[in-house]
Image 1 (cartoon, rainbow, N blue to C red):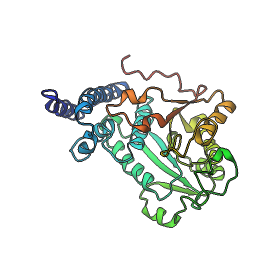
Image 2: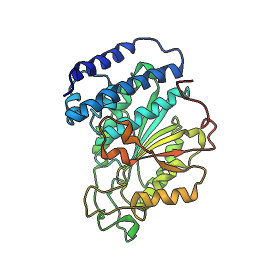
Image 3: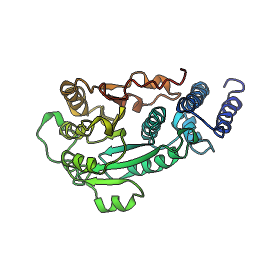
Image 4: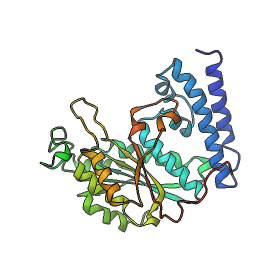
Length: 306
């Protein structure tokens, strides 16, 4: 280990935490402070990664701020924490007061319960000035339907997988709204709720066809979306060598179809995300972003250095 790494890490983090008490008068100033904090985490996190690759697990149990733990992947399901935090930062930079985060494919509700907790923690970050986060989950509750479409990869995602007791899941939630039914139908129910702009979506529907239907949530009017919507695709690649997914099947095939039909709203990979994280992880390659080129806020400057 390099001499002085641990004290330097803690010193930088403690300075950053103390700085949270300074009032931020302008959104860009708030974002600048958060960006400086991120860079401190990146610098020292990379040094830690060379000698202590298991540091994120240790950091889970240290009294660090939530934003520090987001940067160090020191949280369960760090991909959800990252997406929600980044979406809240974008909202703050644009001067918005609230956003919505959604999970499509809730299963037993573990991810949605994480999102509930993360929403409360993000709302309490001083530099985000109380940006509120509504959390919504979507699920059929009946597991995967039977499919003979090869693009659904039914050889791996077999019918009946992920069936759950909807009422048990519903009772386990504290603040999230839970829409039950075919996602092709519940998108209209989502619109009827009149929630703040959608800023983050976790897609976990496995099938190509289900993902095609789920992507309808990105086709809603501009004012119901942030100009750049972060999207996490849980099944963009499989954990097994038997899964063998790619652009012709599964979620990636659905993304390709979306882009062919929506040239002014492209879904694109978040290039180089793993290079902006101190501890690179597989989920870094599962992030895409919807770019709404016609959104009235898309070209609004949010660079904190200006």
